Amino acid sequence: MTDENAATPESTGVDAEAGAPEALAAELEALKAKADENWEKAVRAAAEADNLRKRHARELENAHKFALENFAKDLLAVRDSLELGVHAAQDENADVAKLREGAELTLKLLSDVMSRYGIEQLDPEGQPFDPEKHQAMAMQPSDIVPPNTVLDVVQKGYQLNDRLIRPAMVMVSQAPPEGEKGQGIDETA
Picture (tube, helix red, strand yellow):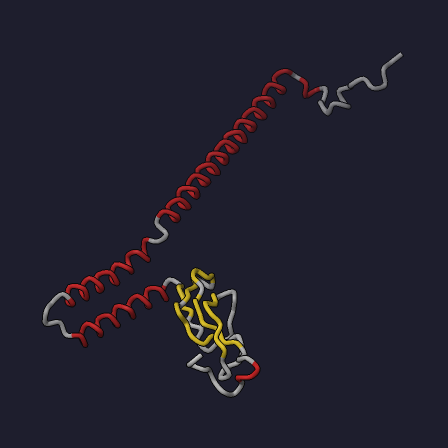
């Protein structure tokens, strides 16, 4: 009785004549060399991936650490201008017109720096009230403008790249009481 499932040289894929020890040893050496080569490639790829991960982590850390460097450098010009203005104002013979002009130029320099970095000023006077960008400080009856319109800006707001960093503090119109329509605001009340 023979075992039908018994392995034969034909079923294992090994040629009976190729089974010579020298041929098998040569094939084994070739396979070992190929395995070693693939192992080295895998180790190199893993090391390369690890180095890449470390480099990206270092670059990200530096980006966080020095993100404001250019902004800070640009603000130094504004500070220098302010210091010159303060120094000039301490002179007994200071010309007020020149001090005002220097202050206006410094303000323009600051506005330019802020604009360069995506900081936008919100000055919503006369616009509809937007609770996403404005903070109402008080309501004031008005028959001059529609209700919920910004009448006055108490403090300007700012946004950075379309993201609010400080809301504008505003006075908002409301409809005048029923008996006062068309009469304006009563200053004596």
